Length: 581
Image (cartoon, rainbow, N blue to C red):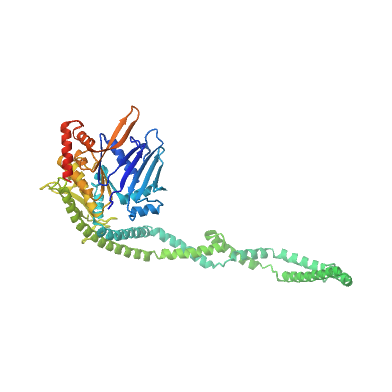
């Protein structure tokens, strides 16, 4: 089975490293050097390759960009390979090429399998391929929240299932509580809004406006207000068209048109064109007659009724009161009334809604209490197994008498809690449990939080033990440790190296270390070397083998590569590491 992922990494113009190639072995690779800067750049480069945060200050002064390229071996059926192919990447014989380019201006680009991709994709791939641990991770392990996350990760589905249900119910409770809070705290405002709506709707209902009524009344008021002028104009027009019976000698349009029609009618048979004109004159006569009749009827029916005019104006004034408050036209007023009635029904239903939400809130609290209890039970069971496994690992890391336990507890509260185990307790998005990792470093010592009870070296070994336990329950192909052995020395350092070598049997392990006892256990030993031409400092990466490796271990042991005593010790260390794997 191919379990290693990182085969090779090429670094160009990054900090003090310039055009270096880092070849990584399938098992355990140790990275050492005289100073921390070069080794840190190797870790930084890996971080960039895995989607870490980019900083333009990492680019060498005078260079246009920094580039990190990597070759990864991945299973074509793995989640990482599938995700890369979804992004358009191509795998060649199970090898995935990835790169990260950081310009001096701060712009960052990523490529996966020959395809430009968002930088975030590198992080997604890294989640399934590489676990990175450094000094900051040790500090993170001191926080109870991280300790709870570690326990939940170890517990797997036993906690993940109830936690997913709990999280859904918790989000719903937050939403219900927020809505309930709004309804109850804004009750006075909503009551005032309801009163205003009710008054307006009653005012509209009392007026009983009809659609278009305001336009009809405006036209009627205009007609009634000018009734006499309209009647006089209609009478004059009628006389002009039909004549005045009291004036037989008067000339009117109907008589003139009739005479014109008779004149052409007698000779129409002689010319079809004239016949057509005769017909048109006849049509004019008929039209004049019709209009004259309508004018007579209009004048007869027009009545200057001041009482009706007063009623119309009064009605218009009532409608104007509505349009002044609720809309520009009566149509707008009717729309407002419809919407207002719906809103009033909503406001009047607040009491019912408050009752529904209160009942749902109480039911959710009960459900959360049951789910929180299930989480506590699952975490308690997993904590026993997790602590036992970590304790066993510590025994192989030169801490044979240390014991790790978990304290899982809840904080009681008098208000706004959920009931767990018959007690009202504080709860949050991850349950009601407060999880704390405790360490008793030797017999007779009381278990204390690792933040208070562990030295730097002990904390490093606890973190390594935790990671080794994870490797057995939730493995990833590659582990990168940045000085995980900080604060460790002597026999403990040997045991750390031995345990890392064992971890490398089932995963690729890359360790940046300053301890020769750890480096001696590595399958491949890389050294970051610096050169300085007086103006520019450059670093390269060199693989140590044979005599070179003995010299490097001698330097790490005594600071003297050519010391016979140091060389003898280095050779003894290498031999012991080979025998003790």
